[in-house]
Length: 341
Image (cartoon, rainbow, N blue to C red; front, side, top):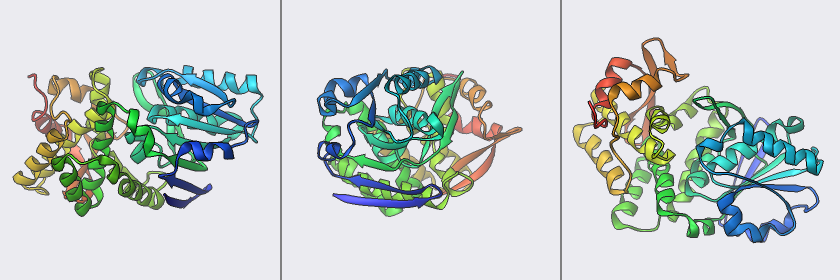
C-alpha cells in the first residue's frame, strides 16, 4: 500500500493506493454516509455497501448534467443529509465528477471521499478537485474546484473493467509521460510493447498529477498542460457519440504532436513514434470527420482568443508548453487525423 498526501487551500487530501476498499468501508459512519454510484458498479459491487444509503445514477456522458445532480439532491433531502455527512462516490470519472459537485454545493459543502473504479478515474479524473457537469452542448461548463478529503484507489476494481475502458485510462497515462517525464514515457512504451499489465503505471501517474495540481490548484498556469490532447478530444466527443473520452484524447494527442513538429519542437521521427505507440496501445489515431466539422466545435471552446486558441504542445518528449495556435494552422494539422475531406 502507498499513501500520498497533498496540501491545498482547503486543507489536506490523503490518497490511499493499493488498499482493499472493503477493508476501509467499515471506517465510515453508517448513519452519516451516503454512497453515490452507477448502475454497473452497483450491480457488481453493491453487496459491499451493506446497509449504507445508496443513490444509483445512470452511465455515460448523457447523464452528466443538472438533472442527475437534482436526483442526488433529492436523495440528500430524503435522508436529511446535513454537513456532518460524508458522500462516498464509488465509480468512474462521471460518478466522481457529479457526486463531488453535488457534495461541494449541498449546504455549501459536505465531506467527500472518492473511490475511482476505472483506470482513467484512478490516474486522472478523481485527482485534482475539478468536478462538475455538462450544460447544453458544452462539456464541464458548470463546476467547482474543491478537493475531496480522501481518495481510495483499489486496483482490484480493474479486474471487472472492460478492455476498452482500460485503454481509455492508458491514454491519460501516455499523456502524463509525454507532458512531464520522458523516462516514464519510455517505461510506458516498454509496458505497451511487452503487453505487460498497466497497473504498474498507476503510482507514477498519481505522482505526476499530484505534482502539477499542487503547483497550480486553480489552473492559472502549469495545470493547463494537463489539457494536452483535450481541446481536439472534447470536440470529437461531441461529434462522435461512438468515441469515449480516452479514445478522443488519443486522437487529440496525435494532432498536438503533429503541431509540435510543425512548430519545430519534435522531429518527424518522434512524432511518428508517438502516433505508432498510441496505435499499438489499441487506441484510435484518426476519426471519420472533416476538418471543418472539428474546427466548428473547437471555435466554441473557452480557450479561444479571436482567430487563435491556447493549445498544449510538446516542447520535447517529457515537457509541455502552452502556445497560441492560429486556427488556420490547427486546420492543417487536423488534416492528418480527419478521414473525410
